[in-house]
Length: 328
Image (cartoon, rainbow, N blue to C red; front, side):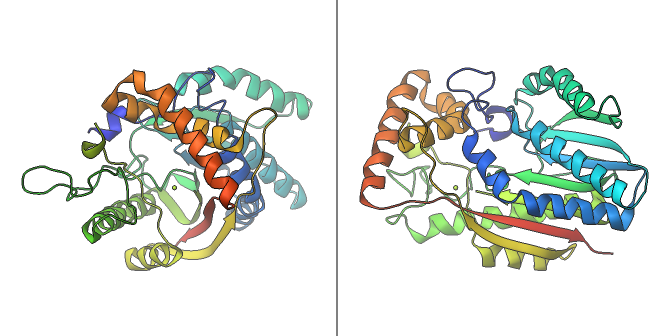
């Protein structure tokens, strides 16, 4: 399957859209907001650029990306006032795969600028925002053009379904499953880990070329049947540390693990809310492979099964907050 040209979050603002089903990702971003803002403020203090280059890799199509950009702008402005230094202009690069619904973001930009000007009584800094389509597993931007790279709930997605999941007769070796499970043979987890190593190393090398020396990355991470495999991998803390060390371009400033607390919506069970969030992310791939007719029943059953499991034991999503600094 051609992941780059098929995979995207569900666009628009409908009931099943990512825009209306990304509160879990927003909550995770809010939990580590102090890390993100502290990192960008420290970066500005040590570099004080006249033009600050920022990229959001995996921006998707909902409101979350403009919210974090607004928070970054305000954090830098507060820091500039404290040190009596003119605020910079902001160059913001929003990146996702080519099939992403960038139009929904662009349509929100006039209101985004109006709100900033209103809050600052017309004294809004120059903010230049553009969309950059393409996979972040490879180069996206010119050399030394960025100061800060932000990526939330994106790097657990692999560039492709790992090779090696089929035998010589092109039959699945992970029969009955679309991902790693307790009954999967060892070759399955090995194939996913190898693909993660390849992708993450390429990601780090590409960002090393694009960041200025001392520039930083802030990442938040969150996780027909036999012929369908997910292009997803949730690395452990040790696996992340090992790959950063082996690639060698970055120093690891911070790596924290945190749990996202359960949050019930009025009239909607937790299982249903999670199922809707997963549907907004995976709908494009599942629809491409199985057809649209399976979607409603599939995610209804998925939500019901989650509620049943939650009644037996508490399940909390675990994510990592990772801050990297480009070395000389």
